Image (cartoon, rainbow, N blue to C red):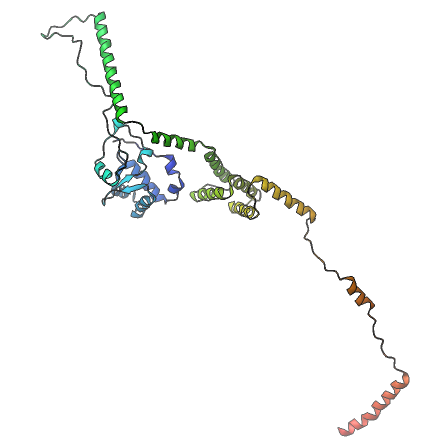
Length: 331
């Protein structure tokens, strides 16, 4: 069994894997490290080794990263063939291979073959000693050279035949080649590069990128578009704000129907024009009275006060004085 194992970057950097707790991810790494050449591992001993809990193993099973084969916690790594490509001439069969095929009949099993770099021991076609034990003449001749070359040629032909048998017994699966090429294309596609640049922009302007931030940015890109997310980041940085400010800008653009950078430029021009029209001040509406109301208030004559003569005034005073004694008598 090999002493080194490999991990597929496509698997361990996927959102499905990153969303798991750190303890579950660590358990997956150690399960891959301790698995045999068929991708089978005794999970119980690994859990005891790193102090993992049963919940960590349940999460891996629920996410589909491992399949439990029996009650003794013997597990199978579902993406084993993507993580590790075991050569047929270097493979050792697992002791749980029959158990694996009984639980997962469609599991890919590589059949072991004899190592191609191991030569079979060839008979000595040019002995230096006679059957009687008498040594022969060891002088090199053309005949001896031809015999030696034939031996080399025979050995090479035997090795090549062994390699051909290995290829014939292990034919290349066309679907596997297509999947491998599609994975390479996805890795080198512009979308992956652009997504990585978004994370670089965040880290340069807002801080370290955590798994939560990666998931948040990915959701914003899916909802609003990559160009708008980058533009919102730039505006948040200019205002010395955090990424939450950029999300507020994205929400406002979405409510206003802004979907492209051209829409953003048009919205900016409209805002500038409105600001120029208002002179930068808040408009206050004043109420004015109609003309007919002004005529009523200005043309309505005031009633003149009645004039009192001096004689009438003296008469009123006299009457008041006459009534005063009567009021005192009643008291």
